[in-house]
Image (cartoon, rainbow, N blue to C red; front, side):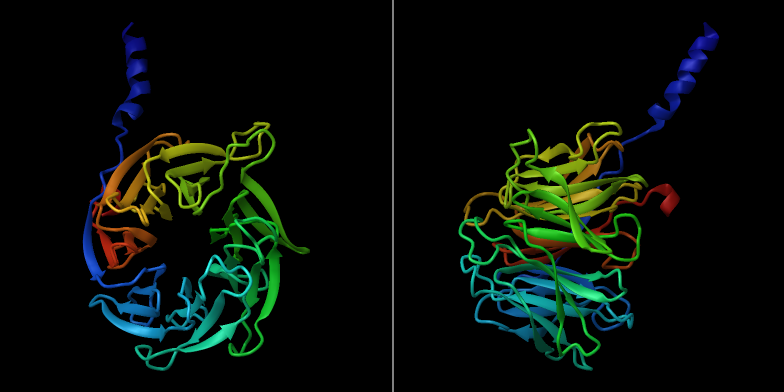
Length: 403
């Protein structure tokens, strides 16, 4: 009897010692309280001082805020008569200073003549205005990211919201394109079409799916969520989530970000439907499952106009958390904010919810970056209805092993 009790105790001890991850703690600091919309936000070192600055695509301006004073510098103004809508920021040549591309001409109702894209040439003094170089583009340019291609070059992938001439998401597919940066950035950016089959492609993310040095793509669209893979004969797509077979209740997705549960198991975080009310995580189908579509885990169904998602290990647990922001656009009196979801198992079935911002951030966009250099990811967000840029400094106690 004693032996069996001892065996039971030894079996239970590892489970008794397991505790939920520490509760997150953030300190909000206003960087700007007078922006117009805050369409796109990024964090990167602009001036080469080793600190991550904040870059914002606002309605009529592209600006950067110097870390840590948050002094505001105008990079470009009114690149088109219509709004700026997105930015792509990356150090492309390894000199410690980021390069910037911009999407503008935003009018989702004009699927024939809207849209614009620019590469911004930096001056020697990066606090001065940068010179815009127009790039090839499709109508309704909406999102862009720099990627590393399999050829070792830098491409700018640009994803419109609609296909040419579309009405209400019906008609020609969205032309997802990669623009190859030439040696001289002011001339002849070559265009490669990646895909033209999807509709209402709201967001996407470059990923290194199997650790390769080049990027592949995750794309969220009305039809589902897709993995785009570059092969010897061009790009092919693999559906991970969506309307296929008997699964007919999928209403599209707006955001898409990849995360990890432990070292090996990945997940995809999204908001459903586009501008929707549900925060959702998908995990790969179980081994041996006849289904090839990923498995759905609902995190929250109380969002109002969800519009931003980030994934990263803010708590030092070895697994990524999910950060979701919502904006409640044109919904006066409805609360806005940011939530953080923490996985409590490596299967992706159990999550804890933490309210990061309670009604002071109508989140249009967010990103995760170590802003203060303390080794922990912080949250940077831009608010549309609240007209603010905020850094939520991560002051969560570090795990003992990480101190």
